[in-house]
Image 1 (cartoon, helix red, strand yellow):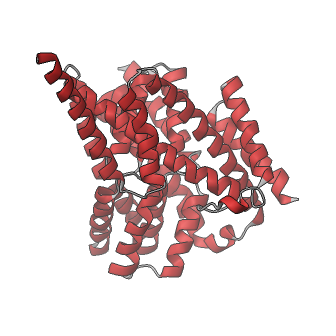
Image 2 (cartoon, chains in turn red, yellow; image 1 turned 60 degrees about the vertical axis):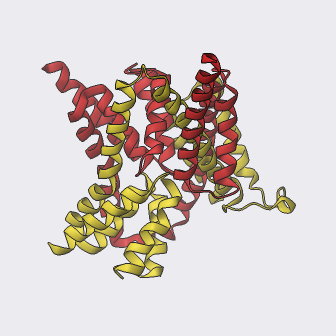
Length: 188
Length: 189
């Protein structure tokens, strides 16, 4: 009982903390979850994290919230989901509730703008760092199809502007087709 | 009361339709709160997006919180945010459980592998946008002005932070704080 209370408290505090420092889009939550859930507390492995990130990215809604919910679920079941979600939406609520009264002053503040411009570069570095690690984990599988899918889905989205849902469905179908043909050639 | 429920359902719809997250969600919210309901003016919506990017938290959550605040105060903000995250969290849990229980099926495993590669590609796409905004100040880049419009200060901060991450595995929160301090020092003078 005491142990579960302690884990609930940790989940709440860590999600509050992560959410309060999520600058520059929700993706930066992936390296943060890795730091606290995988490296510090070892609640799950890095492979698990990539699975969760894939699920969080492939379902509707914000990847940050979906990932926090899944991490909470892994650590403490359904109560963990509620705790993580509440903790993740509290900082924006408090900060925006405070700012909304005088947001025009906030937007035009040069100090705020300078700090945020600096943070943009930091967030870019965080993204490059986690992408390098995630890529090497997928390349390690030595599957040509899975490795080729990374640059192809990147180009399909970034250059051609193809809808995310379409890219995800096509990649799933390709994987199913591959396994289907592999089995057929084996049987013949 | 009526508005609170409408906020919940409108953001429920937005949450359900926004696969991929990030910037893809902005036109969806704009359509609902500016064009369909007329709750927010076009100018105010631009401000809301700017504020949502300046404050911590995922963009979708910040935008729904802020629109909710404008329409229905604190209860409105809570209703809009819960509506926005509800579908994603429920579907994520189902999908994750499905993959966990069918781990032994070769097909399910292969689909998960496909999703992993594809979503990594999509994360790289989002990261590219983030890098362009950080180094060039906007989302599009032109080959001709690749060097002249490059923000060298941003590039310097970027490489210092990347070095810390690769060599010393510095805590992500420390990275964000350090780069904020660097911005304060370099850009304010």
